[in-house]
Length: 72
Image 1: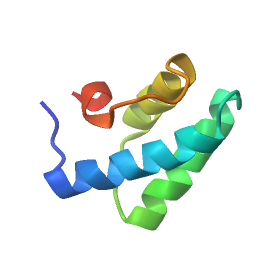
Image 2: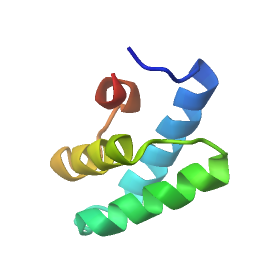
Image 3: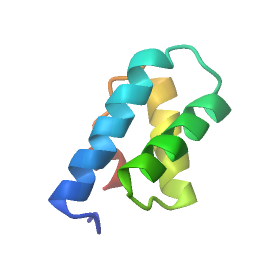
């Protein structure tokens, strides 16, 4: 079960959607870096392992990722 509030999950999903839309084919490190920047801008703290899972999911799913599914 996720420890994020609905508002936090919405912010996380917005960042994931934004990064996924322009990072198609980018190296995983680039995706993770852009996610980190987006989360910082949104004021949401995401653990490093969660960030890695989201970046891997974006790479594996060609950007079509539901953050709440990845984060549990």
